[in-house]
Image (cartoon, rainbow, N blue to C red; front, side, top):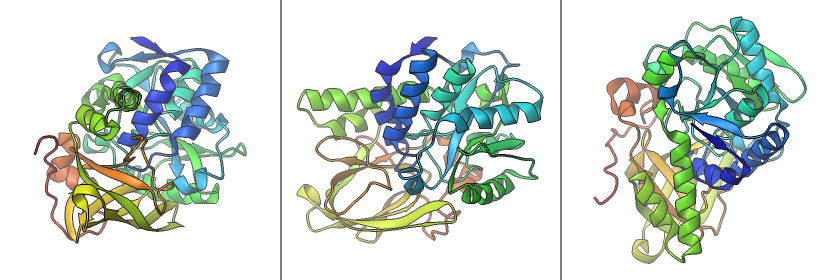
Length: 359
């Protein structure tokens, strides 16, 4: 058990954006929201999953929508507590803890806001070990946990509650509501018992995010390679280094979708990498051959600074390094691949597990 203060936020937000694989929302926006909440309410208590009782009421929070929209339609912060309170009313129970549903720059920060505003501890975990674009793509889904009842809230004071037959329907109906709310909204769903949290969450996510962010900062301060430092903490490796020469991006159906082409530099001179994304980076193909794909992590970092580059900020001329990082082993099961593997997103290539560091 320890406290998170404003001093932790820069490293935490930076590392969370790396694990967010290009999605999960803008880390700067998330950091500002968390700073505001901590300034008003004081530090947030961070607890390990094993420190909570089996009968705990764990209510996760996040933002849903297109990251490109959130750069212009900034959240107020009130939406997060609004969504949590709406779900508490539906459940007839108060949250004893909150947790992030995914790692991501904004969505690793939003539970900090909820924890500070509601006065409850934050669990050092998340539901994916990365970020995915759709609500049903959580490990609790594989464990039979229902996404609904769930609640959405926007900055205008609107809230929507849903009970759905399946987690896939939770995604469809919540996405439609989010589009009507301006393509971004706070969401609270996957209410868990303490026992379910222990069984189905990825442990230690926030601690890992802070370690990654710290490693990047310290490498930069010591004039070392920040990209290599991040890869070392994550057990990943650099698969490509180059300059972004083309980005094609659209916002449709509540998602930021597109591709980016990166011309190789240094050891990768003469080659080209294409990234395909739907909020998050989904596939990285070198000269037409897939080198990393979902559910493994594809993380894009600024080559010089090591700062994570989200899909909404990727632009022409940016020098980037692309990391591949192995996913949580549960995503590599047949059930995990059916939920969030390349076939789900319409890609025809077979999934080949990424080998990670030193290979």
